[in-house]
Amino acid sequence: MSVIADTSSRALQAHYTISEVAALTGLSAHTLRWYERIGLMPHVDRSHTGQRRFTERDLTWLAFVGKLRLTGMPVADMVRYAELVRAGEHTHPERRELLETTRRDVLARIAELQDTLSVLDHKIGFYAHNGTTCGEGTS
Image (tube, rainbow, N blue to C red; front, top):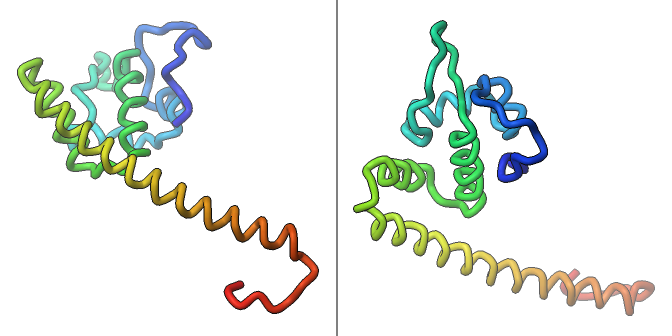
């Protein structure tokens, strides 16, 4: 989800249709409806004909949800976070704890990836220096 954090590159609109939001975020209309249904999206206003009308605030929220998805946070935790946001400022400590837990998980994954990168760099170095020899026992 590249999107949304930079609103200066597009004209600010009061409202966006679900197809416009899908195009801006890379999420499908089905996913946007699902987010709303499970409580991950706050209430989305509707036009007089019942068409969803997303706001800049909704787009900003979706950008944040996209970042949470990238962390690997479970959907249930994202929904819980959204519920806490809607509940008000008194939930700041619980929100912070959810984010700190996710941050720890991300740091652990980064460490695992750095270790994996080190192994790959070692192998690449081996092949760069010994590319014409055969018989490496560990591939």
